[in-house]
Image (cartoon, rainbow, N blue to C red; front, top):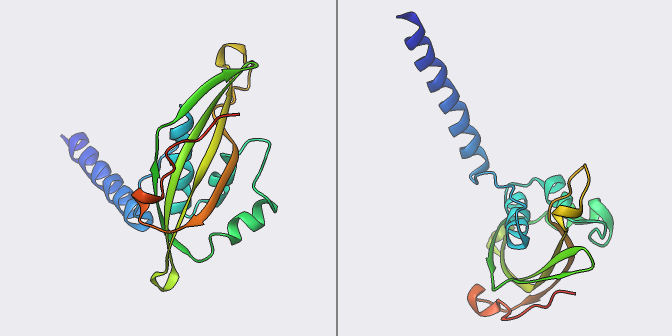
Length: 163
C-alpha cells in the first residue's frame, strides 16, 4: 500500500520539476534532424530557448561567419523569434541529399523592437545508406538571410534552390 502513494508523490514531484523547467524556458525542447525543414525549426527552437551552443551545433563544416562568439553576440538583444518555412526543395547528388529551405523570421528584440529576416537555408545529409559510424544527421550547410520588411507571411521567399 505504501508503494502506490510513494509513486504518486514521486510522479507529482517530477511533474512539478518538469512544469517549472518548461515555465522557466517557456518553450518546449525540440531537436529534430530528420529532414531539412526539421533541422531549421530545431535551430530556431534552440535560439528561442537561448541554447546557443545547440543552435551553433546544427551547422555543418561551414560555420557562421565570425565563429561561436560572434554567433552568440548576434542574439544578445533577441527576446524571441518566430519562423515560417516555405516549400522545401530536396535534391540528391554525389552521395548527399540537399534541401533548400525558404524561411522568414520575425525577431522580437529588447525594448519591443521587431525585425524581419528572409532567405534560404541549405541543409545536407550524407546518404544514410552510405554512412559509417558515427552517424551524421542533417546539418545546415549554408544560410543566406537578409533583413526585410514584414509581415512574416509577406517576407517568405517563394523559392530557394539547393546546390
